[in-house]
Image (cartoon, rainbow, N blue to C red; front, side, top):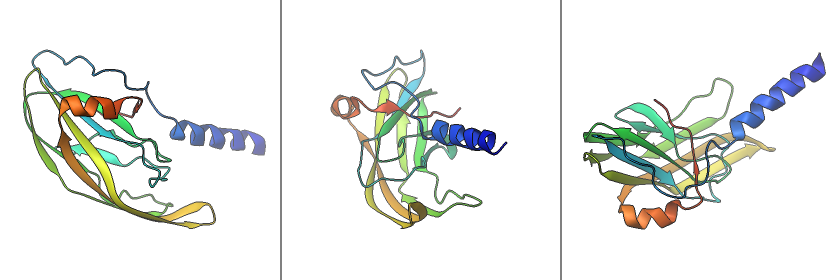
Length: 166
């Protein structure tokens, strides 16, 4: 019974650490009459967290852009044209986990029908403290800013698609 519980716990842990999609090769097609929002974060060796900070679009979870352990990622989603506010979930709470503090600006973007808007989330300051090998606290500050579509394409190459929420 002990071995079975160990295997179940290991399976859950490994599935939570997995990245979600294939590496970026080209922008996805834009759904008719919608605007596309692409949000990304490049790989950063300073980001060693084994959790995925969540990106918010108009206050609702819309994806993650960090796959954990310093691996960058991206998320792409189509929305109706109009204003959209991009931010990050501050201070995610874990019932039995470490203290996590996330600070980031919010960015208003104007999605245009059949056009793509690309936003980058970049770590500008971060620190973690560990108890042995276990994370005990983390404080990260991110900057969210718009990037021209043509410039962003080369930065996105090879990043894996992270989780997207509905």
